[in-house]
Amino acid sequence: MIAGADLKDRYTVERLHLGSGGMGQVFRAYDRQLDRHVVVKQLRMDLLDIGLVERFHREARLTARMDHPGVPAVYDIGTHDGCPYLVMQLVNGPTLTDLVEEQGPLPVPWVAAIGAQICGILLAAHQLGLVHRDLKPDNVMLDGSGAVKVLDFGLAVAYGDDRYSRITQSGQVFGTLGYMAPEQIRAERATHRTDLYGLGGILYELITGAAPFDEADTAQLHDLQLHQQPERPSRHRPDLPAELEELVLALLAKSPADRPGDAGEVYDVLSVLATDLPDLPGVIDPGTDAMRAYSSIIGRVTHGPVRAARSGPAPDPAQAADDARRLLADGHTGTALQAFEQAISNGTALPPAALIELHVQYAEALHGAGQHRPAARQWRLLVDLVHRLEGPGSGQEFEFRLRTARAHAALGERARALTLLQRLLADRARVHGPADSGLTALRQEIASLTEPPASPSEGR
Image (cartoon, rainbow, N blue to C red; front, side, top):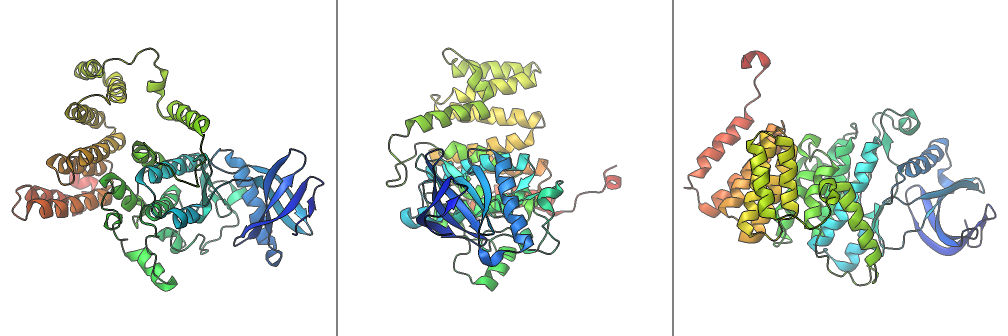
């Protein structure tokens, strides 16, 4: 495709060549009918076999199927000189690879904001049964308003729908080495947790400025990704919130079962950290208040229906907390949980000790109701809260880390709980010394998780 080429008597290809990928070349073009610039992605001439053409068309169908603001819109599809092409939304902004090269490691609020937006896109994809399978910094862009776009659904799979999964054959390996999950390297079935591994690699790079195993060659990368843990990101960023570090390491777990349950769970951790975003000169356009206001309202609608539905002045948080405790004591668990959530959302002005106690009571109420997943989220929030208030290694931080591990054990996630407990044991021994009386109980708890679970007959 050359500059000046005319497509469908509508699109004029411009001189600007935006790049090349494994499947095609990308050009900027002008849509004369709607007076806008677009992207034209054309399959390379040397890849014109029936399998790649089908995969190219499949990407168009999958991307159009997403219909999400975090995925560039597909406007049109056609053929030019025998080569298929897509016409897509033009995103003005850098890829995350370019962003890190220009800015270096990003401020924590921006890491969280970008990651939280990716989670929202993954939730939409996973609800459709789609697994992207090629999440990496090159496939994510940040536009001038601060909005994230996930690109290239060419490797996605959709289980249960032969139209989208038939080109994936047993034994084929899809993805990008360095960001692909261990199960992809082993050519095993990809699930939504496969995408969470890719997200972990992206967050690691945004935090440290480098991929988890940056200096390895191809052969080393295979071995490292299958068998070795990446270096803790806090060694590059000592100021990194403990909650963010634990999340990234959990996302990069070798076994899918040891990663977070879904993108919503990851969002809950990241969204709390995405506050007070500093300027990113040359990246984020000035005067984007309209986009921020829009995003803020959408966030309230989609993630806080109880909070958003209220009108009038916010209730006194201390009174709301008392109401929640009374409802819980009277056995009205569901209403009490809503009241706790309401009290917390309005309780930012509470003294730190009172706010921590409110979170603790909410987490315990969730545990008592058997809602161990949200309880685990609350304990992790508390870990980060006291870490910021009291610094690393406080007694409360260790207690909340223990409660987090127990919540995952209650969910049946023994491997993840064991990992959290072992890290807690090492940190507590480092802070308090080997004579600390709490270490014995921790070792006993670790031992109980390393024992194989009892069979049904043994439990009788």
